[in-house]
Picture 1 (spheres, rainbow, N blue to C red):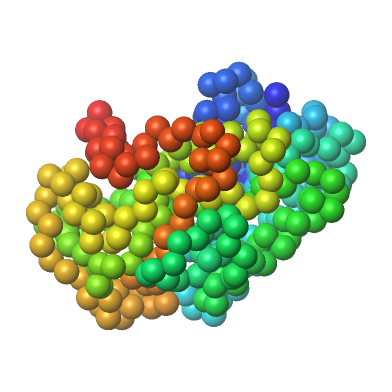
Picture 2 (picture 1 turned 90 degrees about the vertical axis):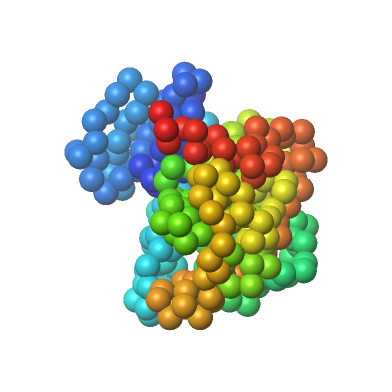
Length: 299
């Protein structure tokens, strides 16, 4: 089968592409600089102006492109975060419109930021109330753009990613103070962290592709969120480092501004649809997820 992926050269996109290759599928990766990548028997890199009529039938279109959230959230950075996601999504929709044979499913990236921030509420895909912060605004607009695929009659999944753990992404940044012997809870430590191992994130995306009953929002998170103080304690243990220095929220926000909410605030999100549809997590527990990642770094 063939799959079209935007954001396919990023952290999660790379893992998805590799997993599909291992199952004998072919991925077409949308990139602004296809000539800087080498095509293989399983991968073809194409630019955003590639003639759609020359593409084979796509089983699924997977939309993961967007400006990184990391960096100081200036007015320009915020604009880039939103606009990059809307532009990529709208472009993917235009490509789908011009396909003679439409894909069976459109998987569009989103985030658990949709739900907003809370230390005591539990969020599932049944939660319809939207948060009131910047990240909630981003995810709402992102999902609204992706709804165009639904109106074309294509099964559409909004993949609401939590904190994806692996050798790339946010974990290396979170691990840095721990490795420097300054690991400890951040702020109050009471904020929830809804995490998922990258292998489970990929498996769950594939589960969404091949299970036609899944549509609408799907939380890409493990079933056992942790408070920050527990998360950092388990991370310190997996890295064999002490857990003792608290990092004040004021220091985080003074250093990186509003982006600090990614670290100092959170939400408790459960993958209700995954569990109800028979999905089995390889790493349902944080201890095992971080242990595997730490082990892989030693190889």
